[in-house]
Length: 123
Image 1 (cartoon, one colour):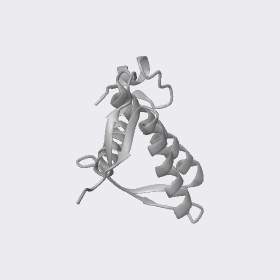
Image 2: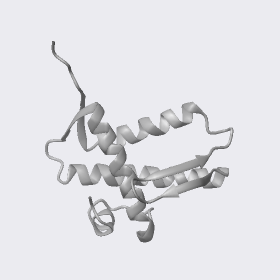
Image 3: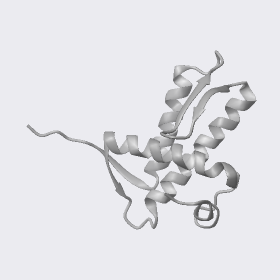
Image 4: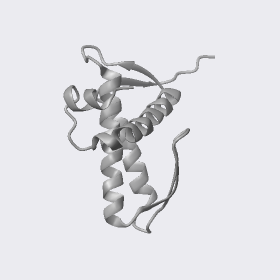
């Protein structure tokens, strides 16, 4: 997992504060792990540190979503560090479509750095 120095110096991230980076990186790692369960994930040829960069991109998006939610009044109602468990009380405006689009956005950010091909089952 990349550290804050990688995020700042190699990925050139500017949004996530240093003290918040481990939390968002952990959430991003969990999201990439989920993508690896659904897709065959390999680094994009010619992209150095592809997985680390994908993780930073997804962490940035998750941080941006959290900032947007805070502006809209979305509150964290439960949180835990072990195993990344968070629960939110969502306002009415946060629809299933918004949640889907956020997930899709994270996928597309990761796909900028990683090749993600659907698993094919052969009989």
